[in-house]
Amino acid sequence: MTKYFYNSYIFRLTAPPLFGILIYLLILMFFDSLNMLTENFFSREVLFVISLTFIFFEGNRLVIVILNKIYPVTRDLTLRIIFQYISSIIFTILIVSTFLYAYFTYIEGFNAIRTELITFNSIYLFTGIFYNLFFFSLIFLNKKNESKVNREKVLRENLELELQSFKNQVNPELLFQSLEIIISELHRDNKSADGLIGNLSEIYRYTLDNKDNELVSLKEELISIIPIFKVFKAKFDKSFSLDINVEDRVQKLNLIPGTMQLLLEFALSENIVNEYLPLIFKISNHENLLLVNYKLNKKLNKINIVQERLDFLIKAYAHYSEKGHRMWSNNGNRYFEIPLIEVEEER
Image 1 (cartoon, rainbow, N blue to C red):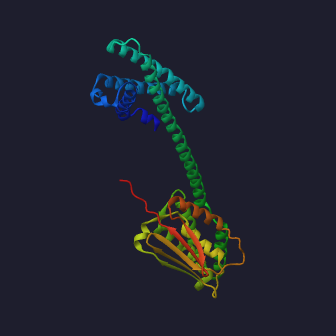
Image 2 (tube, rainbow, N blue to C red; image 1 turned 45 degrees about the vertical axis):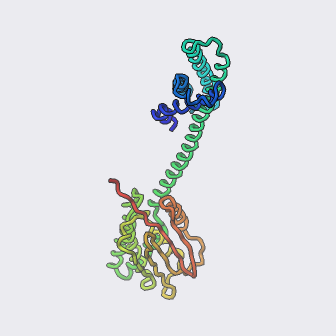
Image 3 (tube, one colour; image 1 turned 90 degrees about the horizontal axis):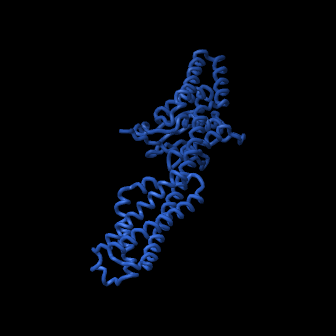
């Protein structure tokens, strides 16, 4: 930002005339009457002050450029401030005194210009202080912004690592329960067990296929929970059902891979499921929000091994959407609200 600003042709062309006129007005207050402003406004004095101001600004800019190469602000900023102010003061006094002496001696024909030297140097030194102060304010602003950007970058990298870990995780409890169901089904119906083995492979194939994807479509996610549903349907039969009522238009929207699988796992892990306490896993939408709910028949065990992964999922959705992922319970029911993410295609 500072590099662009101090190399900006717009700034370098517009600042000297504006500051030159302002400085000329200040000088008039010392040496002239403001009533003579109209008479003197287009005189060579004005042109001299504007020219001197241009040289002053360009000279101070050159001092900054040289110091950036000799002693950049990335080293000791305190020493850089001292060096820059000393250099600016020396340069300002030399340039202003030299040009002022030459102008009044050879153009105006004055011999004694002590008062003019003091006045001009005071004004330009005062201007130089604010010029450098503005430069260092930009440096501090840049450092603050860079710190924020780096902090956000670190948070994003950490989130991406955690998200990658989340997508690669295999819930051992889900695996053990699925294998138990398959073994039980082998004693009853070999053909049915073969189908459940296929469903189990589909569950983990989906995880592997999307381990490198940040987002997937809702349609894919809804399809991904069918194999889990079929495996546990073999265990709970009519006590477990899936009710999907989602508009076709929102199925093109996106969410984090594994979201629906995790919510279904969470429902199975926290609920007692039998013929007296059935689990109906309902999925619907309200505009671009996905809604999941089911009746709570909580187990006595308060430790839910899926909770940690669910907590991370809620945090991850806060990164992708301002609305974020919400979970709450009310009147004996569990509710989830998940923002569906619209990805704009690059043109």
